[in-house]
Amino acid sequence: MENEKYLALKKGEQAAYISIFAYIFLSILKLAVGYASNSEALKADGLNNSTDVIASIVVLIGLKLSQKPADKDHPYGHWKAETVASMVSSFIMMAVGIEVLYDAVTTIINGKSESPDPLSAVTGIFCGAVMYAVYRYNHKLAAKINSQAVMAAAKDNLSDAWVSIGTAAGIIGAQFNLPWLDPITAVIVGLLICNTAWDIFRDASHSLTDGFDVKEMSFFKNTIEEISGVKGIKDIKARNYGNSAVVDVVILVNSNLNIREAHDVATKVENALIKEHDVFDVNVHVEPN
Image 1: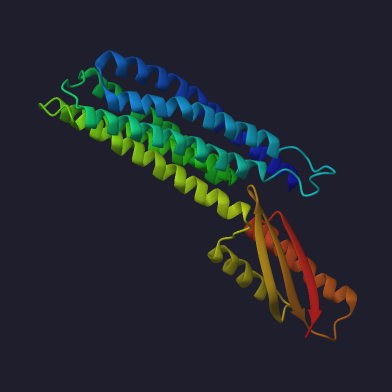
Image 2: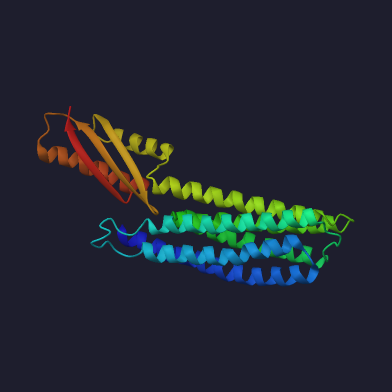
């Protein structure tokens, strides 16, 4: 089980590498065309992608650190490094979003008289299509390996795809004697970046503070209650270590059972949760009833 989790993290590195290379290519393209075509929205989008490179590198480092085995300072392993990486990437994205908003609002206040070149719109559409393809790959991989960091990267990919399409729409609109529409689109770009950063931060902080999905917890309870020998559940808790769930449960068994029989019931609980819900580790305490 543990080796499978480490292999999943190793596969997650593919998503980080793909995102890094895609963002480097797209940021260079957008910034070059943005400055050449005088498009505030495309320059804002390019700046976003350039910092996405840093965020993706942070995710990659987090995935690599998560693969380190347990040691004296980390007896439970380094699984949470993946979640910490997600949170750091959200900080980077939020900083970029605020900067994009500031630049766009400044442009609106100062006024803009020139419409951007139509080439910038074509660039935005092309970049949006590329980033959507990256999102589809990373989202599928994140679901397969149950990685919070890779899923955060996928959310960022999708946000960037929509941002690029929105950028193109604003640039096209600016061609109809509405040059102010380009910086207005840059404002929307900034807001989308900030919103995605908040979503990633919220999920990461929920996990780091030992929050757990209530619906998934109810699935655990249903599985345990159906096991022969379990008379009830006195208490159950769960937390996440990166892409791994750890469950602590107190079950009630018949008071007439001897130690070996009670231990067998506890083993059934452990095996059921691991097999049916891919739980990494289960700690079962037995109490007579």
